[in-house]
Image 1 (cartoon, rainbow, N blue to C red):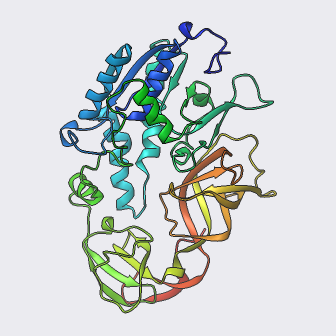
Image 2: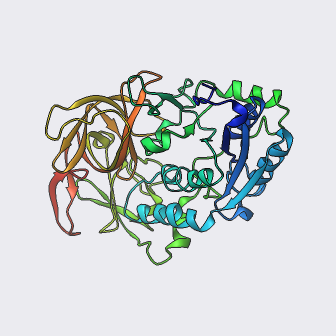
Image 3: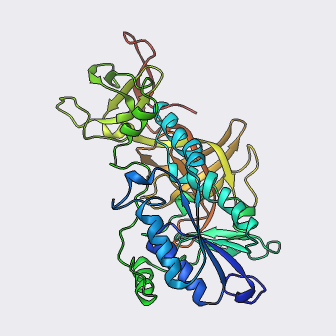
Length: 401
């Protein structure tokens, strides 16, 4: 077996490397080229690169494409740029806008990996006769002990601060069989040191930001441009029924937000729910953010056996934000779909986010899958606004399962 777990000599193994123009994917390409693999670099142009040239934190556009090309020339591999702008717009940007208008908190990086990088790019790699597709993600892929030949599992990276497994839960078992992540056992300091060793002038380049197609960090600007007639003003309402003020669109708010509410109050208030149907931002005290359970949509399972429907729950760990570590939970499969129960409530969980499921809380634990949070159950029973503006009734603060 070579270093990519294939029974071939490196020189007989063709590897397509997804090169974003950043230091991570550049080091992957250089590492594999040095080992003697037949390496081809591919960069995807995903959006209007004119907005991103010379801007720190961009990826897949403008200066990044030039950086990827220079790295390929430096290490002596062929390099191609593929225009995926229209596909990226339809699969990622348009869905991002619709999700925000529905009062959700979408994660476009997950959709980009699912719909573009690990589908379209994998097809391109196959067309080029590649044995594997390698990326610069900080996550690990290893053969699963005792599983059928070729079966691989996805595992958290060695560096918990760089681990990107949260964004890759939608990877399928078939895709994992030909995906490789050479940086899974390294940290960022080691990666930058390798870049200097390879003589790459992007060794100290800034990391890319999470949402690459938002030039100024203001999501609402993108949505208002894409859906100019869909953004509606409405009321900011306390969970007890008091109208606290007005807003110019729910797209300017996210669940858990405290600052920038635009209302005067003597108590700290947080956004606890977005009522898209009635254009309302519901605010309340911090304890109303506590979530004890979540129902999931579009579950992707890459573990072994799933728990039986209506059977014994599976003890797992889950992650509801990329910046949080996994916490203990239970996974149940019900007639209405998967439900995750949290022994210790999580704060600020919102529909549209990803819930990623792990085997345990261990640093190198295996990713079992995940899904999109469809609805949440509050850990506390509170008062919530009813559909009519002049009527308030007791209810669960967030959507109930």
